[in-house]
Length: 242
Image 1 (cartoon, rainbow, N blue to C red):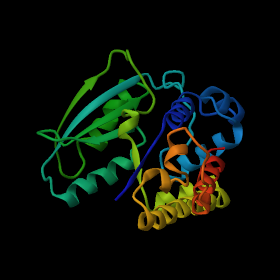
Image 2: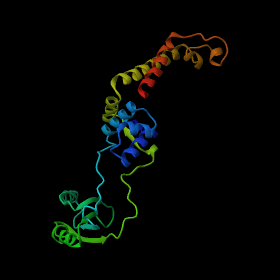
Image 3: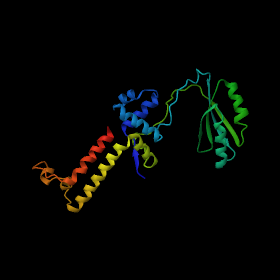
Image 4: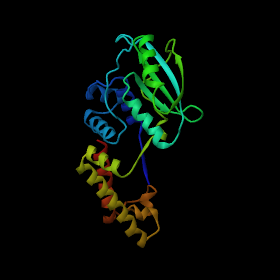
């Protein structure tokens, strides 16, 4: 299945919104170096395709009174898929657990737990976590401080892509049907032109609608009417870009 890669502008949009999700579309467009209308279309396409999952406020944990952060390494008695999913459903109901990751190796899960104080964490540990069904052991580590906190995560731009299919329809809806028709129609005309020319000549100059002399920069071009769709193909591409 063909895949569509994000370009540099898309990555700038994602990075900017990740750093400041409340910025206006005008400010975002100025930051990434494009005009406002295509910027808005790109943002909507990124939302529809799932790259942007939502917009959230970045709350100060300590200012809200949650000064304790603990990481808990949890091992289960059974690693059957049903038991793993049952534990994950249980974790989803614990508000003090902010993040949960399943691990490969001896430890099954690592939990990030926040609490107002050690007493609250101790109550959660003994009454909720260690007493849960199928929990065999829990090892905890209290954090001292945080030296790095980066919101979100990015791979290299060239490694991020989306598949054609449902996501492709989202892109077409976000960028508008008329420009998409123009581009697709132009591309179809371009393909038809090459197919017609392929039966008449293998000369690349003639396939582009001109004589060999004009193709190399000399003489007067002998315009080929079959090359007209090529022009509209570029027009369609220009419409989609702007």
